[in-house]
Length: 121
Image (cartoon, rainbow, N blue to C red):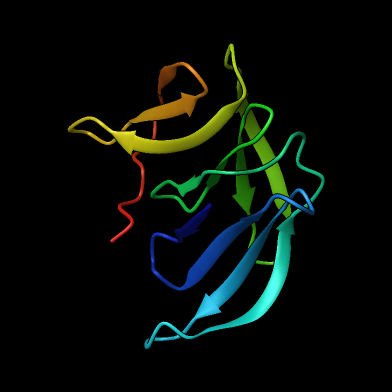
């Protein structure tokens, strides 16, 4: 999965082989540079990924994990959304953008959050 930070200055990519999230700086033309790993050792295989308006990153892996990314590159696990099945993808929705929808093999889950999802455009 891929997503962009709320300010449009970073690209995040889930790396399923290395079970990590990579980040790239984006310039004003969309050129990606400065590849780095911002989250390592994610339980499960990371797939879908999204950001909220505060810049936190949500990734679907064994469960859905929410990470805060600090300016110094450190990542802090904020919380885990447990689902009955392994999640594959996610998206923010509803008119207020405070519901996280989570897809899995046979189900769609949703959970209300106290933060708005960042619009990917």
